[in-house]
Structure formats: structure tokens, C-alpha cells
Length: 165
Figure 1: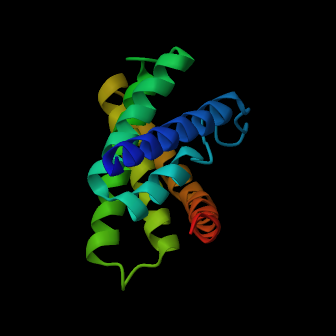
Figure 2: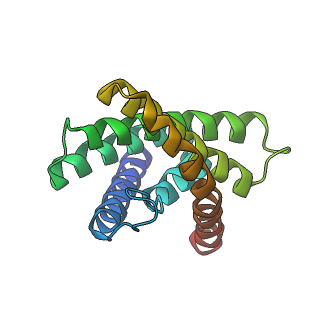
């Protein structure tokens, strides 16, 4: 019974992350930084990482990426591979920092570094897919944007933690 409750809860987290991802997919991007997003689905990623652990969070991230790409029609497109690379590296970095350096890094620091690693992985994957080294010039802008988006995600998670306890 406890395992079923856990699976249902994780399923609700997957559904929530998909809804946030699709909302973000629908929102227009800025002309200043085309393709830049807030990373709303990362709210769920960070929340699940903290409350349920790395393995369950990996399941949620993978299910969110696969299902949301199927729903938005981007499965196995460049967008899918960018999302997969960003989601996996971001989770690895955030998980490593959260479980090994929690005293040195606040939740905001972990989230910002997760956002930065997400952008780094996306640029790396884009470089591999389009085989054009000039894509690297976009990285400083994305890294700059990872600061406010990472802070935003962490602040939302901290507020959610208050209400979910």
C-alpha cells in the first residue's frame, strides 16, 4: 500500500511537470534570447529530488521528457535531445551537490548550478547535432539567464515545501 501511494504521488509529479513544460512550451520566447525558458518543470525536479531521492527523481525527469515530447510532437527531434541532455546533466549536478555539499550550497545555489548545467548540456548537445561550433557563442547568454531562472525555481520550491509539509 505504501509503495502504491508513492507511485501515485510520483505519477502526479510527472503530470505536474508535463503541464508546466507544456505551459512553458506555449509561452512566447523573448526576442532577446530566442529559445530561453524559465525552466518551470525543474520546480518539480528539484522538489522530487529533495523529498523522494535521486532514483525517483530520475524516473520523473525521464517520464516528463518522454511524455511531454510525445504530447508536443517533438519526440526524437532536436528539441527532445536538448531537453534530455539538459535534464539529465542538471539532475546529476543538482543531485551530487544536494547529497554531498548541502552544507556548502543553499537550495538557491544548487538550483542555479542546475540551471547552468542544463544550459551547458543543451549547448553541448546542439553542437553535436548541428555540427557548428558557433553555437558556443550562445552559451554566455544562457549562463547569464540561468542565474535568475535558477533563483526563481529555488524560491518556488522553498514556498512549495512550506505548503506540502
